[in-house]
Structures are given as C-alpha cells and as structure tokens.
Length: 131
Length: 360
Image 1 (cartoon, each protein chain N blue to C red):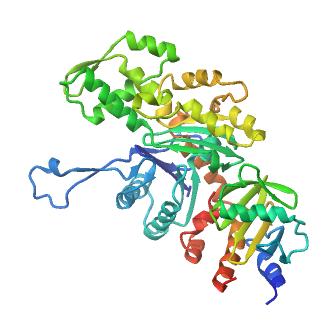
Image 2 (cartoon, helix red, strand yellow; image 1 turned 120 degrees about the vertical axis):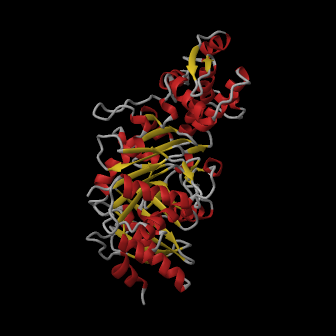
Image 3 (cartoon, rainbow over the protein chains, first blue to last red; image 1 turned 60 degrees about the vertical axis):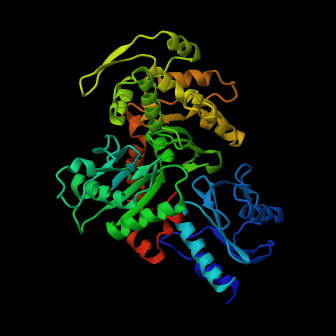
C-alpha cells in the first residue's frame, strides 16, 4: 500500500462534511513519505524544532510552531505524542508515530476536534502496525 | 431540551440548563453527609461522616460525585432516566488527563448521556464577559488559578495553579479568632459564615498596618448565643491574598504572580492579556478585593500593568461567583448544535481518550 493512498483516501477524506486543507506523512528526519498537492514547503529546521518539542514538551510554546513559514500558536497537545497549533480559525495537528510524523492542516469550517480525530486515528493505526 | 452546564467547585456546585443571561438554577454545597446504612443506632449523629467529593478543585471521591450528580441531574434539574440530554463540564486548570477520562466514562456509562463537552474554567470565565483572550484570576474555595488564555486556548506554560483558597482563609480566621477568644468553641461552619459576612481587604499596605493597630470592631452573635467582637481579623483574612506570608507561605502576592505569568508569554500578546484581566471565584468577590487588586496593579511598572475588566451590563449581578458556569452556558449554545462535542457514537468507537481530542 503506497503512502500516497494514506493521504488521498484517509487523511484527505471527508469527515462530517469537512476535510483537511492539506496533509503529509513525513519521516523523523524530515524526508517526505507522501503529501497532498497543496502541502506547504517546509524547512528541515522546522522539523528539528518539532522533534525537539516531542522530546521536551513545551520548548516550542514560547517561540511558536513554524511549518512552511507559517507561525502557529502552540496549544494543549499530548506530551511526546501530539502537538497542536492554532492559527486563527484554523491550525495544525502533528502526531508522532514510531518512524513518522503525520501532519494535518485544517481551516474553517473544519473544527480542531475533527482534525484531531482524522490525524490521530491514522497515527494510532500506524503505531499499531509498528510504523 | 437545553444542554446542562455543571461547574463542580470545592465548596459550591453550580448547575443548570444553558440559559446564558441568568444565574445557574442550582447552586448547592458540594459537601455531603454520609448516613449509615443501618438505622439501628439510636445516636445517629455520631456516625455522620462529612464527605467532600471535590477537593482543591479536582474530583477526588468518584462514588460521592456520582451520587451528587445523580441528585443534581435527576432530582434537581428534572432529567428522566432514558431521556438524558447533553452535558458540559467546567474543569479547573491542570486537570489530570485521567480525571477527565474518568468523568467522560462516568457520564456515558452510568448516566447514559447523549453528548459531552468539557472546557477549562478560565476560558469560560472570559467568554462570560465577552472576551476570547485575557487572564483570569480565579480564587475559589480550594484553589487559586491564574491562567492566560489567547483566542480561546489556555497557555499551559504560563498558567499557574495554587493550592490556596477560601478554605485556607477560613482556617486562618479560625486561628485568629481562637487567639482572641480562646474559650469560645467555634465550629468551622460558623467561621466560614463569619468570613463571608465580615472579611474584607484593606485599601493598601499602609492602611492595613494602621488597621492592625486600631480597628473599629463589629459585634457578631454566634448560633449558640455568645457574642464576639470582630475587629482586625477581618482585614487579616483579606490581606493574606496579597501577603501570603501571613499564612506562612513563601510566595508572592496575587498581583505579582499574575505579572510573572504574563511575562512568560511572548510580548506581542502582553497588551491583550493585560487589558483583559478578569477576577472570578467566590473568594475574589470579597468586599474591597477588586479595588485593592487594581491599586496594587497600578503600582506595577507601566510595561506590565494589569487592568481589571468589568462584566457587561446584561449579565446578572455577582457574576464572579459563577462566571465559569455562565461561560459554559454561552459555549454550550455553540458547541452542541454544531456537533463539536463528544457524541455517544464517538465514545463507543474510541473510548474515554476521545475527550482529549475533541474538547479544548
């Protein structure tokens, strides 16, 4: 099963009438496994910062979470597993699996709760598979 | 049917249907008495145990909480078994994840509700006064929370919780009165009443010093008929929030703690937070507290000077005693119709951990 199918069929699928703006599955080193068409171009040090926040929760909060040049305000996530960021009515959810990062970016009318459901569900499934 | 909003505090439980412009229909004490199952003993009063399901803001006795909620929902608010509605809970700051999960589990499995949502009390108190960003200083019976909220999200890093509240002030007052009247037997509930009636804050440090030396005294009649005079003890209680050394704690006063919390947030948000400071909670409604707070705040350096916000006129009086509940009523009107809450189907599919994903 190719990684692109995970993006197209699962992450970008409709949930309660809404869908993510963009999504990607990225390795811990920043290498892209698959991404949706309009996923922003991100920089390697943004991923380094994110991985660092999983190790030391709270390190991104003072400066903010950057992804593809966009600044997100860090809100309550789950230490070592989920980072959530907010930008106005939209935001981003990042779920860490054993070897990858699942990233989902949403905007209105999608709610943060719906984004979390999609991203974290795929993440949990991959963790169960050992990935 | 309207959603039910519940704010379980250490001393008072506020519950009611989500009607934002009114105070909650039920404001009952959280403390419960446990009567023995067998009535065979002739002297039943010896066996009454006082149970506090909520200690320092967090639910600690789940069985007692279940009984209390049973009473509130079915007897107080008129829910029928088989036709339960939706419920919104106001949680204090830093509620442990396990506690939230347990609450969701209790709600769906024992009470069989159709929808659930939980939100932080700090965010709700801000919604009650019509803001989405700001700081809240919530001084309750069991705890004091200083929280910074930006666009509806609590900044966990710069928010603080203190295990200091009305309960400690009551103990302080009991201690002080015990010094002045060693022979009088004062029960905690009497002292609690005296505190609510007489406690106030001096205008500033100097005024407090003067009052310590000479202070007009008021007479108070205890339930058992004895008369005691209350003088400077009432100001001592109010002062303890600004000088915790009175309580024997090595901590800064409440205004300094607030400034400290705000300074840990990135500076672009400072103005937003400072201009929208809310005082809420039962203990914060002590007479003279707000004025003293504002005065201490104006003594701060002009870069970080908090400014207390007044509630809107259409809100009921004494909003600070139940602002989290009113905020809950406001948000219930938005969250439940838009299906942003945890539904029974979601819970069945994912389990209690869904509360961390959907509610914040």
